[in-house]
Length: 190
Ligand SMILES: Cc1cc2nc3c(=O)[nH]c(=O)nc-3n(C[C@H](O)[C@H](O)[C@H](O)COP(=O)(O)O)c2cc1C
Image 1: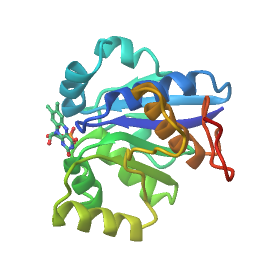
Image 2: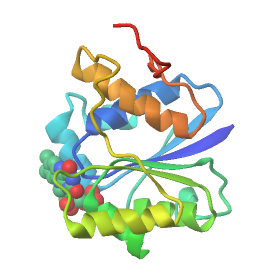
Image 3: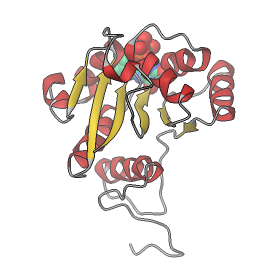
Image 4: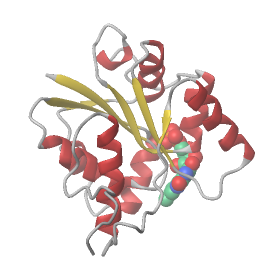
């Protein structure tokens, strides 16, 4: 069984996390470990029809963000890596500086120190120089910055199409084919 850590922080974009967890449920050999910040809980209440319990129910294992002794806080607990979706600028700053005062930040720090894949779906608009500097520095450390940017070449018909496309891009980073992910192959059918 491969393990993937999914962090939800207080950026806008909770439907991305929901769709990612839904699609990962269909991947037989992936066990998802979910950790959500307080900011994530607040944005979830704003942005999703689902309750926090329902969102957490999509994961295989749920961790309390205050539990710094959880399995995912240790490098000896093997995972394929971690994705933070959505990733707030506060969490970007915490990861960049190594200030691991909650489980999500500790798990990201562990992912970095173990040289595992760390994908941040970093979301803010517009971006200030601090945000850009932090993301640049993280990128230099091998972190993949995957902002939830709109794509038009795949002719999305709905917000759900846009969400699925970004989730497809996240899954691609872990070698997993996203549901209805439309790749550019020279000409995408309308
Ligand atoms: C509805 C809502 C949307 C937000 N969207 C963003 C966002 O897109 N990016 C961001 O950096 N912060 C955003 N914030 C602010 C963060 O939630 C806040 O800075 C929080 O302290 C982040 O903490 P966390 O990273 O521990 O979750 C938003 C807050 C709310 C209530």
